[in-house]
Length: 209
Image 1: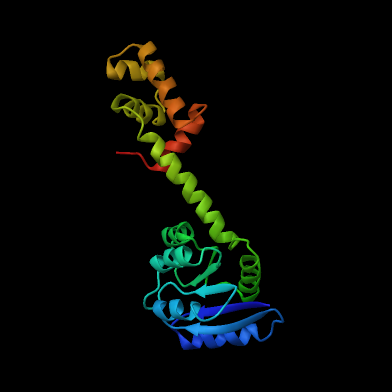
Image 2 (image 1 turned 180 degrees about the horizontal axis):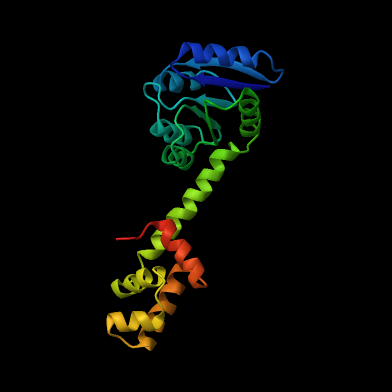
């Protein structure tokens, strides 16, 4: 049996969740908390398998997740929140949450997440996981162009505008060999293989000045 604490300051939300769990054979609500402090007090009194946590209740938030992780290392925390900002989700997971769901998910997804997290797994709904992956990739790529020198950035912009090595050399009053050297270095720094990839990268990062 998966015994949980509902930590949410909205009575209607807790009531709806309790009604949902009565339809299952393996999930039971052992207690309810409306504040972070109430949750911490309850955890000293009862033994549960999972905390279902709303981030925005009084005394809640990411700091509470960190506190729970410190005090109860093996206690899974599943966040159920209205917030879908990737920064909030990422910070919650880094703080020690075992899973994160937004409140617009369907009941079946919530039940799946509870069962997986209670059994030692981790859960993020697929759409959120996809966003996190792409955000991570994008952040990583954005940091790449910060490695470019002023001259390399200048040549990147000219290449992206469609100019050839000869045209760039003439415009900047440098030799074609120097342009080619800068081009090779910026390709290496940006992890690019050809001009088509360079143009896509340039457009994706919105580097136009």
